[in-house]
Image (cartoon, rainbow, N blue to C red; front, side):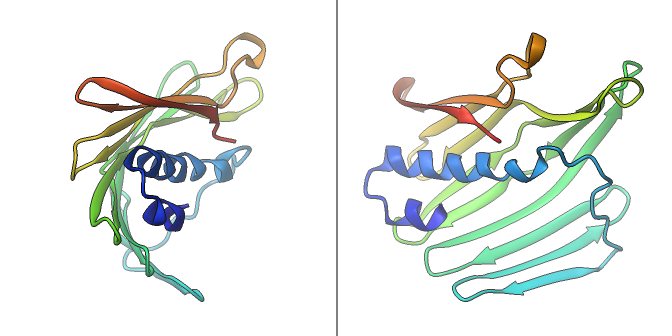
Length: 184
């Protein structure tokens, strides 16, 4: 997706492809209710593929902070992330991500920031557990100030609107395009 974004000539389509990359990361969370991987402090993961390199490290254990970097001929990506956790009496675990994902597309030399939505694990006490991502994912092009806020919606009664997300591309307070779909 980021390779396509780097090759895209139209800046509106380019930010939409970066937003699609941000949304696509949540697909693997659908139905994943087991405890996440919790590496020990200093543990690293390295992957060298045919056309990219990826490196991640657990840089702090309490609170858990991970950092990663990836690069290929089209982009540079890095992130360091912390999560503010909370549990409600209603049986919902809430994880608010702190920090941004950074993407630099090499052809246009544009730097994008992605701020992520809140993740909730619902029905911890009673009922069937499920994961939702709710709130706004913000994608910002730091070079031209174009933004693409994407709203992740909570499922309604009877799972109406489950996994829906809707966004728009904005520049100078003017809506240039819209996107919609499901993160799953």
